Amino acid sequence: MRAMVLREICEIKVEGKTQQREGITIKTEPLELVDLPVPKPGPKDIVIKVSACGVCRTELDQIEGRILPPKLPIILGHQPVGAVANLGTSTTRFRIGDRAGATWIYSSCGKCKFCQSGEENLCEQFQGTGCHANGGYAEYIVIPEDYAQIIPDKLIDFTYVAPLMCSGVIGYRSLKLTGMEDGKTLGLYGFGSAHHLVIQMANYLFPGSKKFVITRNPAQKQLAKNLGADWVGGIEEKTPEKLDCAIDSTPVWKPTIFALENLEKGGRLVINLIRKEETDKEFLLKLDYPKHLWLEKEIKTVANVTRRDGEEFLALAAQAQIKPQIKSFKLEESNKALIELKSGRSPGSKVLRISSDK
Image 1 (cartoon, helix red, strand yellow):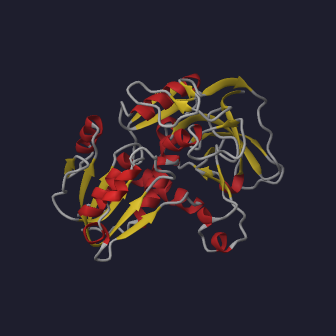
Image 2 (cartoon, rainbow, N blue to C red):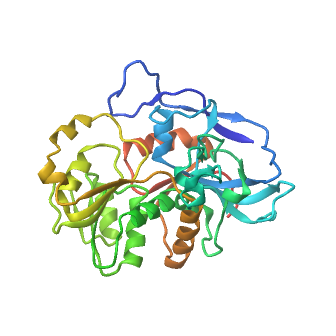
């Protein structure tokens, strides 16, 4: 099978962006196209023939070393979808040809207090798809069947389903963690792959709420308006109303400070990403306790996802007809997709089209 492999940590070279760290290799093509054997399933595994795989900012973190993969080389990608091509001898949930996909959660121990309470995302033995195990930047992926997701029949085109597996699922979890209710005001800082799906969720679940989008990217501002944002502004602007709930999905620190300033008393800010970059960390020195934190404001982070998040969100996506805006690339164009993601040139989601199957 063909696969795109990461062999070493490096920084992706993007026009107009300066190098962030000294002593690290700079590359325009961090991934290498290789031929590998099709993986064989263990007794409780399934093999998926990958039709499409979303491209995520977490992959930038892995390539550039903000998240260190436990092993190299590794096949990245945690948003693969396709049809089941092979089954382990002890599988029971799937049949050959079933529509299936993977999310960020590849496995967990199943025994610890977190797993037993439905918080498997916090398990010490949490394994990430495309991080601890080979992922979906390939023609095939093997995954434990208990952690694979069944794709609802109403979600027809795999190219549009792929971003739902991470951007959608983690966006759904972040929205849940805000404590959002109809009538409350929601602020979305950054408007990338996740938040252009979150606003669609919020429009469906909370029709009586105002949704404000805060981003510096002109293309993202226009997309937010097209998707029904009640107000769109820049990072340093005051929102028209205080925010009961806010989600920050940006990789930098400046938006966090302004989000806290715009937060209502007793409001909650959820930070939805695995790592923040170090480029503007000194901005945290501007943190002022009475202005940004006092009056029972809360900060909560999102850590991974659970299988239940995936099941709930995919059902919601099918019911609400949530659809990403996508730009697709061939598997061998993975490096091009990553550069475009890092540059922020186009809004919405980036997707690798790996086979022609729906």
